[in-house]
Length: 369
Image (cartoon, rainbow, N blue to C red; front, side, top):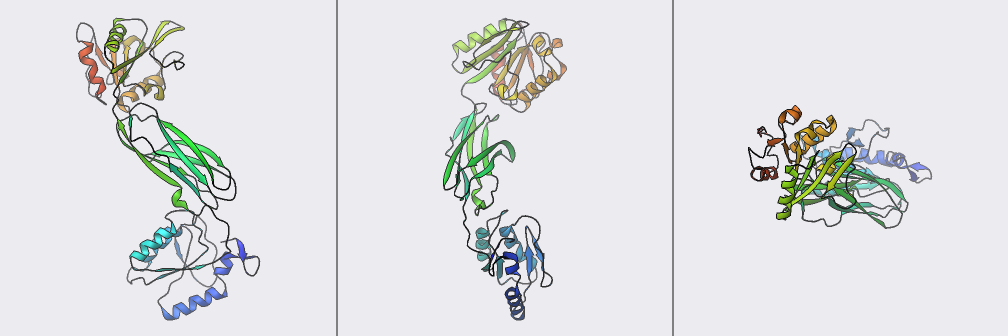
């Protein structure tokens, strides 16, 4: 409303809207109807007197229109007369709000102010996403961005899932119907239907805020192949058994990180070029697996941050955690997260499938070696 593009030259839109003609219009309407004038930015404010100031805050034109009937609780609202330059940068799109009022029998008439300026849109949408994707595996979400503004823009994309922010991305677009595709990679931890949202931060001159956000849904399924990570200090019977089981069962995939010396590690089962320096320790790295098998002495030497990551792997990812050896060598913090077994007491083959059920270890008891 501060833009000076109204006659006479150098008159602001606000000055034009609150000028002599506008005051005469208010007086005529007040003589014929029960008329109440309001000002607004992100909410309605009663207008007192002929002179008012521009209200601070964003302009939520659509929200303000929908809030107008509540200002007349004891009288049916006959119509809304809007004096505006049409600019709205927050909340519900004005056209959608006007349609809702029309459905209630309340017409909206508009007196526009300001010159005819160049306008455009910055729109974001998801490219078609896969209908299904397994839990614990990377999922690619392609996002298309289009700029029809006459100037170059720099803004940010924000990806969320269930209201939780996952990633942000700085982007820049050339003017004049320029398009850009960005790829977000996420690793969903649990099975279930996931709704992802992508939003582009508002850019000055964007007249269609309703195109600033888009949604897509993906069914996250339990994996067909179960991925197991073995961690240890030696090539013990547990690793040998798991290696034979993986060789005989195509539904079982085994990766191993075994410390052979203080600075020497044996790795197996990792994709070429993705072997860790020692062992996978970040949440993203562990979430690629469905279960962890480790000896108690190895777990006992882990530092506190890695222990916390493994506990979250069990409680949040729903992964399984098995430990062999003496329970006394394992930190107490793992007592509710890991299940212990020995070759003599229980068959690993009989116990191991329970780790494929998400969250099955929160109430497990330990079997001492």
